[in-house]
Image 1 (cartoon, rainbow, N blue to C red):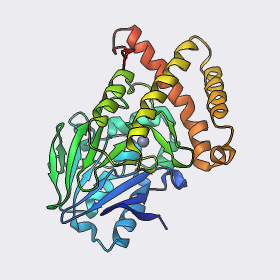
Image 2: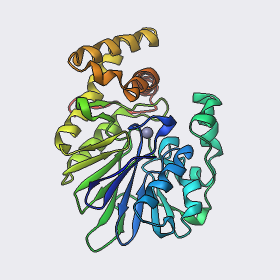
Image 3: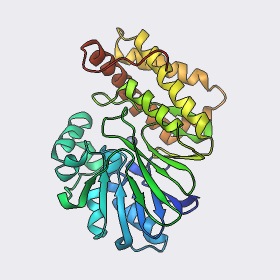
Image 4: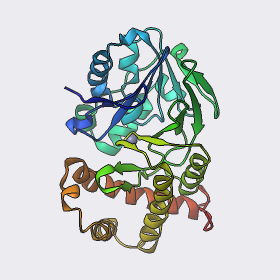
Length: 317
Ligand SMILES: [Zn+2]
């Protein structure tokens, strides 16, 4: 049975159990007069998420919004399946992502190209959403859920150009999607999420600065859990993006596998006191599956900068 718990007033974390791994990917449910689901998990998690909502005593038909922080499979993948059970809901998405929710064929082809056919078994396949049920939301758009709760859209490109975060007023919280990184609460550690093709370091740093301007008391990470020290985490996100950038940049002419080994050694050396943390399933998952991707994302960004297709992050940030 999927885990669901209240993490702030009227905000619930639902474990999407992505790839059958607990504590890896979360969706959040904001339970007000009007109800919103923030992120939808991968397609295979849709039943977990529906079950989680029902366990709160809420009929999925009562849901007004599914807001996706971006259109990657682990965040928007389940939206097309979920919305069939939510006849009055709309899917809110960054303007650059809307057309891919209406026709996810390109997105799925890209996923298969990167992860192979096994992605269909491990994550599932996205279902198209009718155009009239998809709403592109601009930066600063406001969604009123009750007299006490308003959501505000904050465009935060960097992880991807179609990324947004959602600010919620009641608890002064931010649903961070993948803008801040992957969070390991036990170790207070952030793992950068820097995918090839999509990652832009300069934009990611600017988005973190934008988040720092908000009056924040809590961060809700899609991967995974919450932090009540938002300032510290945002500072850490900025520092770790730059730290990894320097590491990978200095080794950019080496073989990518040896860069991964180097980064791994440094990461482990930073946390000699936390052997149990790196033994966890999701930490091993991060290191085995995500580290090579993160390194490739930086290398790809440096290549795009050198080709004039992306702009360099300023040193002063
Ligand atoms: Zn993600």
